[in-house]
Length: 375
Image 1: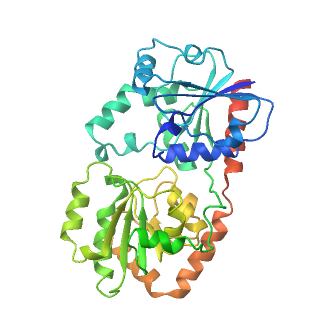
Image 2 (image 1 turned 90 degrees about the horizontal axis):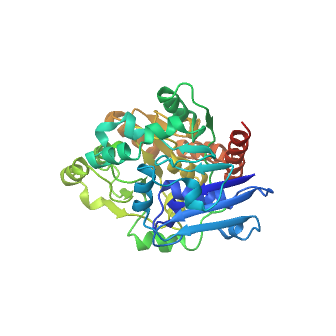
Image 3 (image 1 turned 60 degrees about the vertical axis):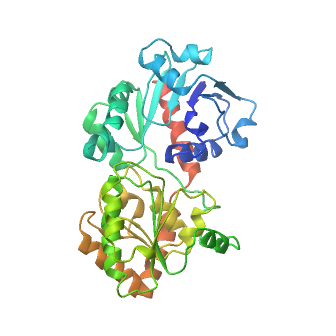
């Protein structure tokens, strides 16, 4: 069997969550006799793991055509997958929703979340235009199979496409990188970002769905009695940031809130290991990678009780209703005031995180591809 995989998300200088997951899946890809074709386009080639590129049955195809032009050609149905690759394949896996080219191959798409459809008010008109142009919903319906990264996302996809073939394959975590044991470099990372213990940590792109203003408001309350506490907000600049900026301006403790922007992959475990808690009061998640990574690092977690988060967190986090600031305040106070509670959250989180690894994910993806190609 010949399998093509779209690796365009690995061409970005700062890969998104989709790119991170794809890299780890390729790194853990099972050894098989299948021929693999990794295709991409754009000015820069993708960053691929050597463990996959050094295999004799794997070849990479990179077109230096800008990705926007390729997407336009696909959208206008002027080019097929076979023309892009220069050959036929049996199955093609797209690790993210978006453009689905004409092809004779069996198609598999991974759906990470349907926030753009379920939480339309949290996106800009440009976002909605992009999803409309890429025919994201239509692509999910056209695909021969859809891989959902959580049972929650699988249910969301089935609401759009009740008769679709939807398979749940959970993400993993790299336990060699995300672990509880402090490293000598940890102090360097904390110093680099100006972080002083004790601190609470938020990790995500700053956008309305992540509900950061509620976290700032809750922090403002507990900071009055925990006078050395910091709130560290780590994440790239997103969209519709007005409420976030307003919350920062109105807080009484602005000097104790650090906004450190996008953090390097190698720094994230250090920040998680030493945090009193990771806080994610998100209104909706397709998976909740931060929760899993934090648990693997031994950090207690406070997160919302919606969407996929209880799936990932199990019995380890303190759960709150996303928009209930008083609940979030109480959860913060409990975690800050009780060493025993932090210990139990930490131990349950470490145990829960052991259920997730990228080998399981890679095997699950390959199983769906193989089954779909044979159907």
